[in-house]
Length: 606
Image (tube, rainbow, N blue to C red; front, side):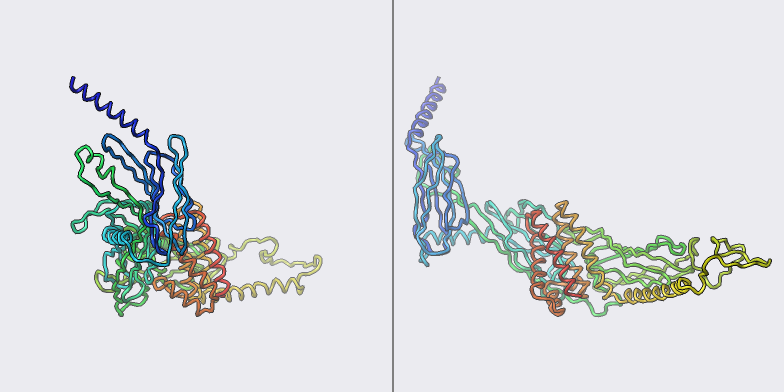
């Protein structure tokens, strides 16, 4: 019976509470943290309704900058038998010039009716002394500096030139993050970088550092290869964040029933604060490579193996054979240039095609790069291809290593459709065939010759047919000599083929653009620009940097507007590559800019 009476009493009290709460007159007010502020100082405007409304609509905040908000908070109190509740919406604002600013009314819907707040004004002066609210803001900045930061973490800080290091820009947080946005991407001057894919959406996870628990996230992770020796710096990363902080109301002595409704869950207020996070610079000590580099060393650093082979050791003339060189291992494998191979002059050869099977992860860059060279022997015989040598520097051993393949013997037989005949070969009478009416067997019997129509002998066509093969042969010799000279001049060869290779990579980039494959698209764009620059200016990719390329272009008398376009195109591409979100429109713009850039550079570099 007592329990039923207690339940009835509670229901009665709740009914009275509901009546009292509905009987309250709704009040929707606007308030400022300070009515006088200085230019550039932050202030807070809060709209409070003593009920539970919906569809809050803020004013336009004309001529003011919104730094944060809206942050929403609600509270409920039970005092002397009366329940009161309220809901608040707060904004952090800033004025950039002096004056009196009028902030319009906000609106909210309550019980089907729209009600409006009062309007307020704030005076912005040239400067003012710090007041209590400003000191509070400084305390907030100090608090966030200790509880929200970015670190650039390198797995090693002393490496050799060309040796890969894994660098992670990691976010550490002990506060509630509402939003983060990358404001500045490290330029990483002096490094060739290879991105390690991370989730586009930042994923926070718990991690204990020196006994303190943080929420951490990898914002950016990559493998860097220093391009020259000395002390290099990892540039700073800047992130703009919105942090939600808690503001507790002062508590007075309450009875247990009141204390329940004055729990921080009900009585705390929250506001959003804009805070810029800047990482500290990290120095990398890069050691120069030893001076005793073997002949043919082109900058490969790491640990590698080599496998070289020809797919057909015995062929016939004019048939193709493939010579493949596969470099496998871990290191700056993407910077390895095609290996020089000594090919006999009787074998026609073509520039090698490159195929990569490379993995980039937290352990570094590993995989294989294969060079495939097409060979076509034009004459029969037995030809020897000298051993292929590949040299690299092994940081683990602090020494150079040279790998060498065996020599290759290519046996070439005369093809059945080969029109060429060697000088030593004999032709028997039985091998002669009747070819139309031009060649016949010699007849011993007397023959009567007669003229049919006009004779071809001594005519213009006769001499033309007689001399044309001679001129064709001379032209072939001139062309062959030029090709051999071009193949021997690697610099000139790379320069002539630079545009063709760049456009081939742009074709692949266009494919990734259609597939909306952001990472591969930007990688191919950068490859096309850097590869074109390396070939045209004869600068190895491993030694190439933005500043070095700009200096080389100036020495080539390239116009300043085009040099500036070169610089901005690379910067836009790098920013889009590392930005959290990349639109297809942005990718299309970068693709078109790169096409125009290479075309204009080609015109001025001729």
